Amino acid sequence: MGAVFDQVWEIVAVCVLVAIVLVAGAVGLVRGRSLRQRELTPPPAPPKPSITTAPPTDLDTDTERGRTGTLEAPPPTAPPEPELDDVLVEELPTLERPASARGRLVRLRARLARSNTAIGNALLGLLSRGGLDEEAWEEVEDTLIRADLGVDATGELVDRLRTKVRVDGSGATDEAQVKAWLKEDLLELVGPDLDRRIASSRIDGRPAVILVVGVNGTGKTTTVGKLARVLVAEDRDVILGAADTFRAAAADQLETWGARVGVPTIRSEKEGADPAAVAFDAVKAGGEIEADVVIIDTAGRLHTKVGLMDELGKVKRVIEKQSPIDEVLLVLDATTGQNGLRQAEVFSDVVDVTGIVLTKLDGTAKGGIVVAVQRQLGVPVKLVGLGEGPDDLAPFDAEAFVDAIVG
Ligand code: GDP
Image 1 (spheres, rainbow, N blue to C red):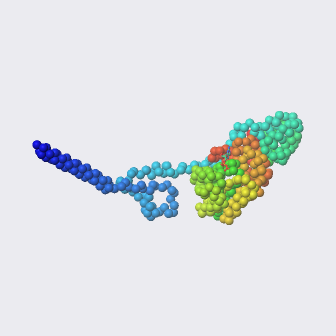
Image 2 (image 1 turned 90 degrees about the horizontal axis):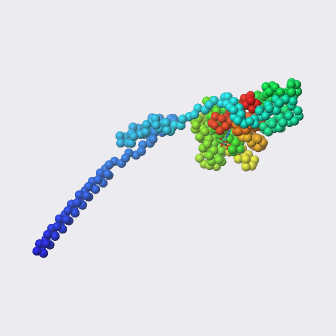
Image 3 (image 1 turned 30 degrees about the horizontal axis):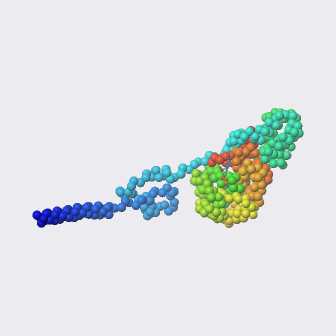
């Protein structure tokens, strides 16, 4: 009985063993097949180079395209490509068409009107009050000096007005008459006949070169960006040079301004790079692409006059190895008054300033600085900044300016 029992157990054990071997074999077979299957499945197609939106260049010929395979038809297994239109819409920046610069200065009146201390209002109030005694004339003088007109110009203006009032004999109560005199005399001081054109067309078969200088914070980089827009609106081919390598964000800022209107910017990727080298490259590139004008932004650290002289002097010398500099625009913040005039003096000792850009005229009633700075430097105000908007830079126009001030 025991032997029979043992035999039965042996048979059961053998059966279990056979069953285990069979199951294990079956599992192994399935796994092996699935692994092989996986190995045999071709890997997904490598990502295809995306369709670039760079403008065609001379190299962008059919052979070139064939070699890079950029425009080849996708293999059937490749994931669906984005539509060409989508790529273009996504990657090509929409170029802005800047507004024409003509007539922009009339906006100054609206900007100044926000400030009820505008010289015009104050003066007219005083002058048309009638019965002008010494005290009233002193008040007129104070108003003009507060408006940054400067002592000399104020003296001249008051003398002329006094003569007119005396000759007229009416005691100056007619506001329209007083306004007309004030406009006439102020216009004379502002200089209606000064040449305020900016060198921005090719000269002797090369681009015009504009160097923009001024203390940091005055609105230099912004002015270069706005000026590029003004010139693009006049169909000029412009190229920018970001030679303000001291301030980390200046080159990015400038590049953004340029990109909005399709103007290239030459810059260094390295912070603190040699500004003269960047300026040199920009002028070189301007020549190569046959631009109409190269505008170079610079750093204006007034650490010491010697330091400034070294820095700007070098930029100037290095540019002049390639091309004369046709225009040096000094950017001054109109709200800084006497301080701005002192800056003007320092810069004009270092470079030959040919024109002044007065920024932030929207933020001040002190339009008199136009007269003061022109007298001090003997060069005209050529452009004025009227706000932070992209088209808030206006070519200076003496008549429109006086109209805006006097009202
Ligand atoms: P930079 O250091 O001289 O290059 O100065 P930026 O160009 O960076 O400008 C300094 C600040 O002045 C920025 O906030 C500009 O938006 C502002 N700014 C420049 N021009 C004008 C202007 O005409 N009016 C006003 N209100 N702000 C201006």
